[in-house]
Image (cartoon, rainbow, N blue to C red):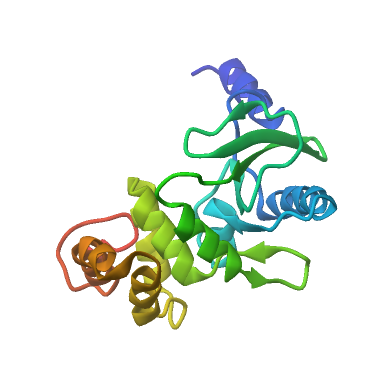
Length: 207
């Protein structure tokens, strides 16, 4: 790339255009607070999940949007519906247009999200955030590689995730069968986090 090409690329990123650049934690927090104010006016329960929640728990992974789980949709005209339930819209934060994924599940995972929302942690800044245990469960069911990497990161943090509680919550919502379905995959992620496997990975390869 030429110097001019680099300049054009950086300008596009700074304009927060269709290339969807990453956002800082402060920008994400402000966007979530704005969304929360709208939710409060409509008496809708909500909590931060996704990449911003990972930031709160110390993850270095950047995010380009804000994921919020909620009890119902806001009375806004969405840019588009989310395939897994809910809607997407943008909020202006300074010079950034921040995408908000307002997640309202209506499928087989609905009860998991309802419980995660019910047991979210209230923060002094007015935000509510999904607990580490519920974040692990929701990300496990999402199943994308970045979600599995996020789980390993959470499990590596000292005293952050109570592993027996993860099992307990899954059984409470889905019964023993749900835990049996999840158990082998969860144990593998625990082994990766504890360095008890030679399988390489983003956060756990010491070779």
